[in-house]
Amino acid sequence: MTPAAARRLLGALVLAALQGCALLPGGEKPAEAGSAPAQPLYRLEVEAPDELRALLLEHLDLARFRNAPATDAIDDNELRRLAAAAPAQARALLETEGLFGATVTIAREDPPGALPLLRVTVQPGAQVRVTSAELTARGALQDAAQADPQGPAAAQLAALQHDWPMPPGTPFRQADWSAAKNGTLARVRAQGYPAAAWAGTRAQIDVPRQAAALQLELDSGPLFTLGPLAISGIERYDESAVRHLAGFGPGTPYSEKTLLDFQERLGKSGLFEAATVDIDPDPAQAEQTPVRVRLREQPLQQATTGVGISANTGPRVTLEHLHRRPFGLEWIARNKLEYGSDLKRWEGELLSWPLEGQYRNLIAGSYERLRSGEELRTASSARIGRTLDTQRLERLYYGELVHARLDTLAGSTIADALWANYHWTFREVDSVLLPTDGYTLALQAGAGEARGRRTSGVTGTARDQGPFARLYGRLTVYKPLGAAWYGVVRAEAGELFARETLAIPDPLLFRAGGDDSVRGYGYRELGPTVDGALASGRVMLTGSAEVARPLSAKLPSVWWALFFDAGNAANTWTALKLARGYGLGLRWRSPVGPLRMDLAYGEELRRVRLHVSVGIAF
Image (tube, rainbow, N blue to C red; front, side):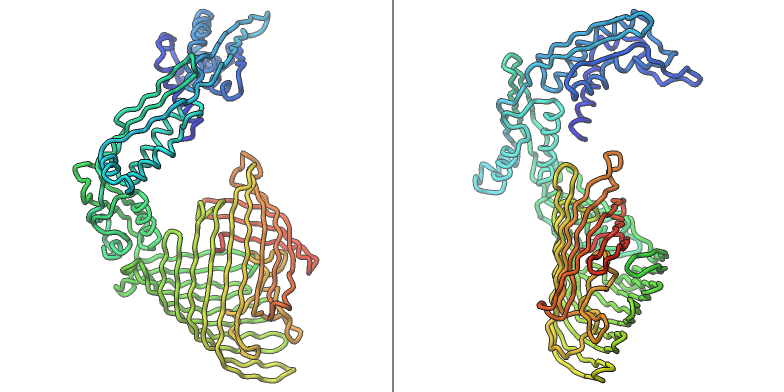
């Protein structure tokens, strides 16, 4: 709940407690069927600072009754009673904002032939401010802090006192006072003491001095440690997969983050539709408290079909099948077939259920046929490896065999490679799906042996074999800029190290251009020219800068953007010439991810291109 909402709720409770309001006839009742539409019975003006004016217009009885249904119409005597009660009600509301010395007056005008006008005038007076805030503790937290003044408990208690949200000098508002207490208590409960409660809290207001002295005593209760897992909802799958994802054992100190991380891993495992992980904060079970894991399983098999279109590869239809226990094995089998005008692809994957240490074994294969401009690429691969996917970090290492053929106007290249690769991805963002603050970093490194042959009408056929290495990195930074503006900066680079004459499978080389590269150019449209035909390069560099903001306050999920991209691929860094693109974009931050539409101008081509994409590339 926001502070503004809390203040409105508190104001409503204050008014409900006033005896004068209890005497008012009728109150606010829902209009009965057939009752006449609400008509203004009088006019009301409130002269006060904007925030206070909004508060009074929402909660004063005078404001609520002026549009009462005709069946609940009040007479002049009742209106006079409402007016007489208004100053006291207003002062009670203003006190929740820390304004204990406010002056409130009300005046009535009855102009001929017009509705009565009631004018409420507010002189807020001085704001009460916090002059002292004392937070003490008792229970296991205090005992541990006294026993070891340099230990974690003492540091935790000191942090609570240092981070108290209402230090001296802070304006005192009832909603802020409630939020500060609730937030501090939630923090203690999340950090090992789920049975914590306030033993006592007091806000002593000195009206003449406009001062508030705050005193709080925390009863932490016992320190909880985690015990055995109590798993429910398992029918199709084994509990072993759940236990491997826990990441903790009996005796681990309780923290809310530990359980939430475990819950997230269960959700990302691919086995469960829903997962809830919690404990019973019963002080009697503080030592080795059972961890309750309640699960709803995914079905054994799942098939998905789809149609779509992208600026990169044109229209397509897709069919995907998932089996979460093929032949009774503890693996997840996935097959995906994509058939489009430019791209035809099959991907298959066997991913084991979580193992000890949360690693998973991986066996995968793929085949694709991609037509891009005047070239045709066919490629296949087979890989075996292991993967680890945590909340912020992904690791993947594998060995792979790659075969590819590239046919262009200049000739053909057929190449094979056997290599080992390591991928590392780190995310530190406020939202994985719709980030606005933080960064992501992806790094890849690999090395192996390649062999192949090139056929050209100019040079004939050349064969070669030898070692190679490949490096790649991509950094994306998200940053709020203020005034509802947000910025995104991306940098991407890669290089393949090998003899110039060595043929490398095209999927391991580099191109630029497209939705997530350099907008204003087609997919894989930027690269070196070899024998008069576009080819893939051995070095690549791209970058992008973008600013965006919502179209309006009424459409916070629809943004417009300005962007500038630059980049290219080449065979050497000295030959690299950056191609530039820039333009305007539209973003819909949907619940399933962002939809982007960009109209970009490519300087090298001197033409405008529309880009459409869904999702985030890390």
